[in-house]
Image (cartoon, rainbow, N blue to C red; front, side):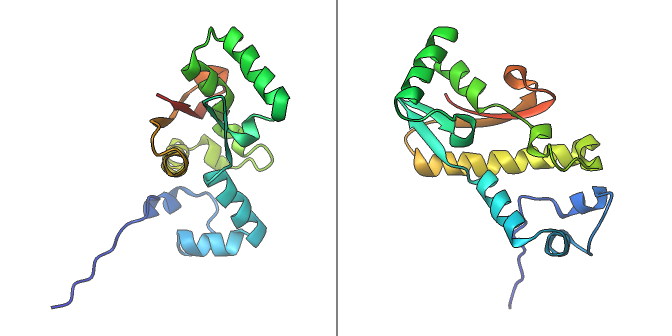
Length: 161
């Protein structure tokens, strides 16, 4: 006897019902009707960003712009600022407000807690796996919370425990 099993996405299909504008009959169809190839590539990069390690600190590369000797100096200044608290340093650099992900494309979804929570779950899922892939020996935590390290509203951060 044959059996059919659906292995559900990390994205709940029902979230589509929360969309103010639906460009299709499903999430998959909506993305095909709404996103360009460039959009898909950019989103893929956000979900699987470059990570940089500087003197044992892990940072989202796009959040830490200094390079070379300037990067080492920046870490030293952060160590002074945060009294060598590695967790606080990584959280401070790696914190990002959800609203800042969409600064150039504000929609009603930013006011919908179900959509924001689903977005947070997706970021945690992908960033956690990315960090585990690169640093399997480290305990990297990705978490969502309100106003993490001074960010506005719902935010995400990454740090080593």
